[in-house]
Image 1 (cartoon, rainbow, N blue to C red):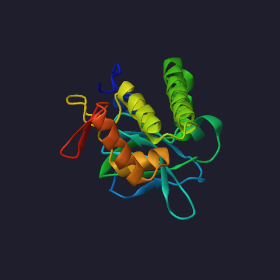
Image 2 (image 1 turned 180 degrees about the vertical axis):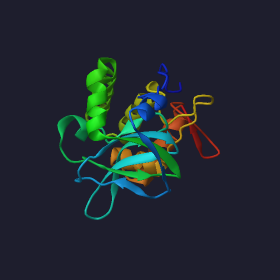
Image 3 (image 1 turned 90 degrees about the vertical axis):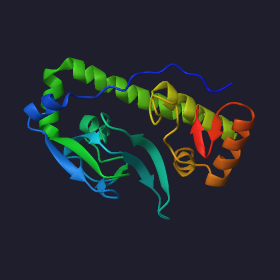
Image 4 (image 1 turned 120 degrees about the horizontal axis):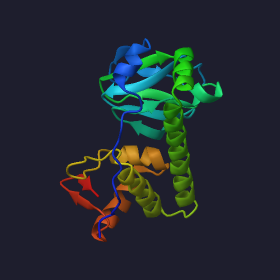
Length: 209
């Protein structure tokens, strides 16, 4: 049986016209460009308009651990907006992208004046914490298939990193490895086994759930 989950429609965090009315501006980002780095000061609220951005931690050897893949309509790097600390991860454009950004003091004023938006961000932060708890729980099992299953189940439930029309996974095996801490060879082998068991479908290299 294929992994089955209810879909939750992905909504834009803040209406673009609303952001523009508060003085936000568009910025084009070329593929491979670092938007901000872990450990630096936060100056803007960022929301992706088009393209794709990965939010990652990078170790001393240059290996990436992907925290989340950002899709259009989603915000990223929001933690320092609420705790005034430094960025917890680095944001890099996976492809040519357009973001809309708003200066941090203006963003703070915006959410103070709009409690519904503050609640929306509280919900987002809670969802991302829950996602990490799910992954940590699966990590304790030391079973790569359980980790991959937990990741795909969560992403499918949130209607994230999947094609809404055909249920095709939009992540590469390497990206799955970077999100779970597994070796890419382990991911390939585990997903092939999951395909054989009917938990997902692999057709011409593409993965469907």
